[in-house]
Image 1 (cartoon, one colour):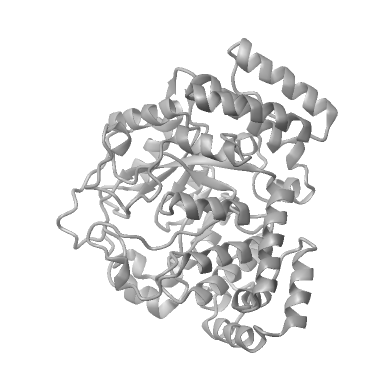
Image 2: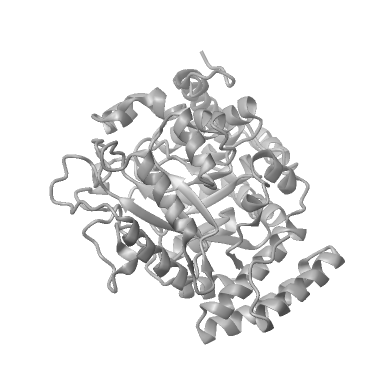
Length: 472
C-alpha cells in the first residue's frame, strides 16, 4: 500500500502506485485542459505531485511541451538566477564488493586496475584540483568494508580539508558512498561533509535486484531507506538520483519524485539536489546492453519536468554528457555542473587523462578554465561559493532562503566574489577578460543597495589587496 510517510521503501516507493500513475498519465497525456491546469499550478512555484508531473512528462502536444520548458527556464532564473555552481568528483578507491552489472567497478571485472589512494596521494590530487581552481569536491569510493571502511573515508575528508595550497582551499566536501548506518552518517556529519549523495540507480525493485545480483547493494530496502537514516544521523542536505537507461524512464521519474515527496513529508525538507546521470560506455560495460536508453530530447524533457515539479531543489549534470547536451540542460534547470573532471582513481595528477580506472567515459573533456569561459560567454556566472554550508544555511534553512527569493542578495554576490578569486588566481588571460566584464554587468542585479556596495568593496579587496573568502 502506498504511504508517503511510511519508513518502508516498498510503501513510500510503491510499485502499484507507480503503475497507476503511469496509467493515469497515459489516459490524460492528450487532455489539454488538465495539462494546462497542471502547468498553471507549476507556475505558482509550489511544485507538483508525482502524478501531475508524470502527466506533463507523457504529454505529446508540442506547444504544451514548449510551455513546460519555458516555465522550467523561468523557475531556474527566479530561484537560482544565472549562477552555476562548480564542482569536481574525486575518486578515492575503485575496490568494490558489489556485482552491479552496469558499473566497471563490479567485483567480477578482473581487467580493471584496482587502486586506492593513500593520504599522500589524496594530498597530491587535492593540490592538483586546487591548482585548477576548484573549491568543492564530491568524493567517490566503491563499497568495500575492508579496503574502504568508514574510517578511511573520514580520514580522507580530514586530509582534504587540511590542505591549504597557495590561495586554494577545498571548502566543501560532498560524499557519494554506499548506504550505511545512522552511526556512520553521524560520523560523516561530524567530519563536516556538505551533501550526502546516493543514487538509487533504479526504483524498480525487481530490476534493482537483477542489476545488483551480489553484494550488500543487493538489499533494495536498505539502499532506498538510506536517506532517512542519513537525516536521522544529522545530515540535512541529501542528494538523490537515478541512472537513466537502466529501467523505463517514466517509471524512474515517478519514483524519483515520490522519494522527494517522502523526504518532504517525513523529514520536513526535500532533497538538496537531484542528479540526472545517463548510462554511458565504460570498461567492461556496453550501454547498448541496456535497452532503456533515452534520446537527448527525452532527457531534456525529464530535466524540465523535474525543475517545474521541485522548484527549490538544485539539479546536477556531470561530464558524462556532451557540451551540447549540457548547454541545453543549463537553461532547463541545471544549477550545478562538474568541470575538468577525471573519473579515474588518481587521475588529476596524471598529465594525460588515464582510462584504466575510469568509472565511465567522460564526454565533456574540456579543462575547468574552458568550461568557466564557456559558461560566462553564455551569460552564466560560474560560482565556487560554499557560504551557505559554512554559515549553517542547510536543509530547511537553505530552502527558506530559496523560497523567499533572497538568493539574489546572498548567493549572487557570493558567486561574483568567488568568481573574482578564480579570475585572479587561476584563469587564463582570455577567461579573465570575459569574467571582468561579466562581474561588472552582474553587480546591478544585486537588489539590495547595501549588499551591492559591500560586494564592490569586497571585490576590490580581492583584486587589489589579495584578500580571500568574503561571504554573505
